[in-house]
Length: 554
Image 1: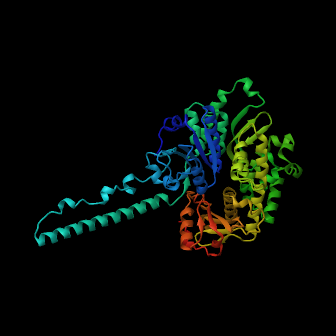
Image 2: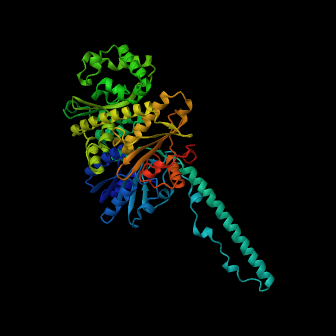
């Protein structure tokens, strides 16, 4: 059931209760969790935080806590499956679901007792009507018992028997037609996966309604929810005016958020400009830096800007002030000459105190790197807590550590993309492109994580489209596979929509993977909340051919 008043139907219900907070391991859920934690601390709500990696983990977490808790809050998990069938809860368990995954399961939508959906209904949900997908038992059975006493003559009984047979034949035909129409409606509704309004934005709007929103909460939203610039600008302006007194603005631990135009270069303020250009997907793909010609073109670009190579290759903070003052304008001017007309982007920045300045994308890169850190053998829950810590302005050391990991991650992605392009690892399989990372590939352990593999997949598809002369490739999606656990012999597989600007970015691969696994008798485990992006498939699948008709995107 959709919640219409999030304050009355959700917060007022749980504010005096003990709550189990089950959170998916993604950036949006991380930001939403940070905001909700602040609200719970403000009102002294007792809660237990449990990070969950997939459906099996969610089921285990529920079994461990169902005796102690009646109320469960699920962030970015639970909306796109029949939750009650998955968890088999008691009748007094209540689930509040704030999930960006679409489509929402129809059983969750029409459950009025246990499932409460904190989802904006002004999103284009397209939920089928109740009568099209559910049918009462009374409608399925005909009442003919009262008419059994009729004409005692044999001819009358025979006629009556024929009438009953005809009636049930018509009833069964109508039922089959209704079920066929129901399957068609559900297929059209469920065939594509996409994302709706950010969970972090939903929780921030709750804080706003409660008049308890802060700059820290707003910054958590901005890091992930950057599609509606106008709305965020209004919130930033409101908070800046609220705290514009002189004492606060000069405080050493003050926080200032600002809307600004900046460069589409990853982490360049915490890196050298040269390394940022080489490891950002936009500039790397434009120059085709995996080729000698691309490297030469980059040198020409740097020469056109008139920047000394010594300055470009040292850390941004160490560059001469005279160069940094006009750096953005110089880069934009030269970028326009070299065809990079979208080098300038709209974004938000934050100042912590006097010296620490970060862009929203910087913190997202850092949090993602901490969330999927493979350098230390730590549990997903430990990584989640560290990523949560890096969102706080009082733990900048953790944030800088995340940025260092993010740099290594971007370099590994760039090197892997260059290797795949140069060695022709991307194959055309008819209706889609396909790439498999071998076990001996450098940094392959990093790509055993869904977010890292997704980022690589997007980068690789963009690079391949830029490097190939085949225009049809712009219309093809990409399937990518990487070893997940060598000892268990498993691989992680995901698919992304085409790079074309006309693509609606809806993803069909969740259903396609299920069908392909069923038709090839592969052992699969679809355990990810983002079902269309990543599936866990047994290593036995590698030996099986990939059939285009089984994973047809269109």
